[in-house]
Length: 110
Image 1 (cartoon, one colour):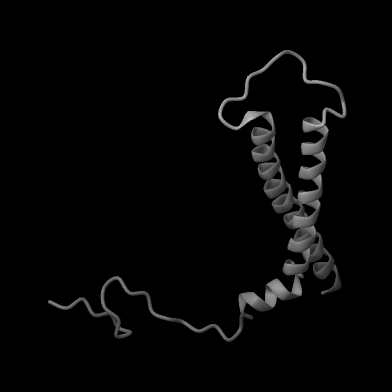
Image 2: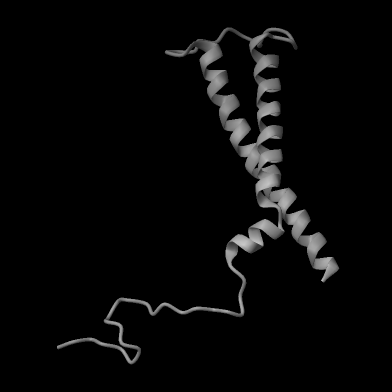
C-alpha cells in the first residue's frame, strides 16, 4: 500500500515549497554584513588570545603562584590550547554582538 500524499510525495518526504515572499538567507547575511563582522570578530579574538598567551607564557605579570606540573604538552602547549579556545569563543561572541548591533541598526531604519 502506497502512502502517497495529496501533493504527490511519499510518506516521509517533505514537499519542496518555494517562498517568493521571503528573501534568501544569503541576502540577509549580506545585508547584516556577517562576513565583515566575522572577520573583525576573528581578528579581535586572535589578538586577545595572543595577548593572554604572551602574558602567561612570558610571565609579564610575574610567575604563576605555586609550582604546577603540565603533563605531555608542558605549560606553553597547554596555554596555547587555551589561547586557541579563547580566540574561537571570543571571536564568535564578538561576531554575534556585531551582527546583533547591525540588525538593530537596520531595524531602526525600517
